[in-house]
Length: 95
Image (cartoon, rainbow, N blue to C red; front, side, top):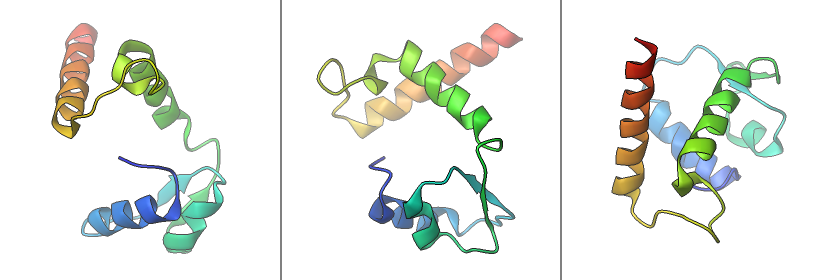
């Protein structure tokens, strides 16, 4: 949770870096190059389409992900539960 800036990215990378990571696919946003290791970092729009489609679905169905001036969530916990519920509902629909 946060901006697409370097500080938020560094925090996320520190959390993810505990796992075995082979590649990191990103678009060409400058901040990513400042904290991601060059040997793991792949810059390509063609590798990010899946996550972008999920982002679009979340924004479409969950008001919490729309503009902050309209509807937004002040609670991290409620945001987390909204995502989990949405994912569970979507998975059930596909079964």
